[in-house]
Structure formats: structure tokens, C-alpha cells
Length: 216
Image (cartoon, rainbow, N blue to C red; front, side, top):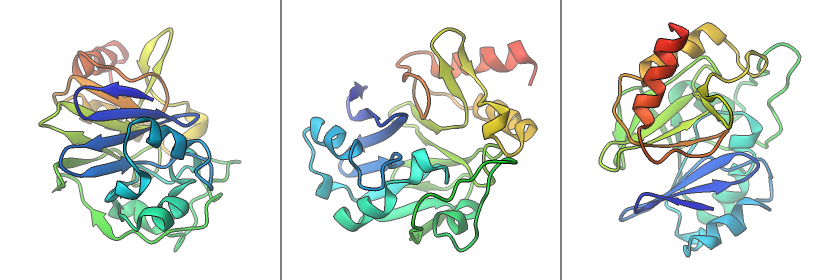
């Protein structure tokens, strides 16, 4: 667990999920383990109770982001939110198999209570539709806190810094890169990513450098 800014936490669950507290407790993504084995102790380290969580946002349907959703819903009865295009995969109304040869259905399926659209602000978070990694992948921007919760919109490599997710994990690599370019148009200092350490300064500047370097 690592505190980011004054009211955000990056929780390490073999990947990273985010916990935001500013008058309400929001969890973004739920880790891999269906029983919350890793996530629940990480939440407790912040000093909050799991039962205090009021909202659960899901960036996308891959198991390291949605695996613990059913358990967290059971424990909290929180409102579940995602982009409207991803909701049918989270609930398993439709099955998303991912890139060729990969399967992303290792979760029981949980209904989404609020289906978000690009540009919508809900509970202070701006939904930014960032497809490519999955059809409905979304990132969430806390504009007041200058914090982007990026999910797998991009990654932070310990040696090379910001970069795209690997093509083998991404449904449409070209669209994925266009989504990175889209995110670079927003301003934020801090970033919590699914893969790689969080960043506390110059987040959007570093992302723009990636876009310019790779000519996205």
C-alpha cells in the first residue's frame, strides 16, 4: 500500500488498484483473487474498513482487475460502475475472450449498477473511454486531486517508463495507442496504473513525452 497525495492509495494486488477517500470511499478495480485474499488486507492497511466502501469502479474485465468484484460486492453492497460497453462483460451477459489464444472469463459475473459514458462525471470522477486494451476500457480522472487512475490504458516500466501494454494482452493495439494519445490531452500530476509503480509528479508530461517519442 502506498499513499498518493492526500486522499488516494495505490494498493498492491499483483497489479495495482486504487482507493480514494474524499467524503466517500471509492475502490477502483478489485484485483485477481476471487476471495479478496490480497486486496482485503491492503485496504485495512489504509485505516479504512472494507465495509466503508460505497462505490466500486471497474476499468475493464481482465481478471486482475475484476477477479475480486463479486466478493467485494458481497462484503460492501457498494454501487458498481463501469463504461457501458464493458458492463456486459463484467456481468457476463456476453463473454469477452480477449486477444487470440487468451481467456478472460475467470470471474463469476457481477451486474453493473451504473453504466457510464465517455465524458461523464460521477462522484467527482471523469470517465475517459480508453478502448483498445478491451472494448470498454475506461480510465478515471479526479480533476480536483490531479489524479488519473489509468487501469491498463498504459503501463509504467521500471526501466523505460510509460509505454503501451503488450500486444498479446490487447484486443486492438492501434486503438490502444490512440487512447494513450487521447489521455495525453488531459492534465494530471499523479497516476495510479494497473501495472507499474504509481507516479506522483509530472504524470501528463511524461505521457505526452511517450506520445511524441512514439509518434502516436
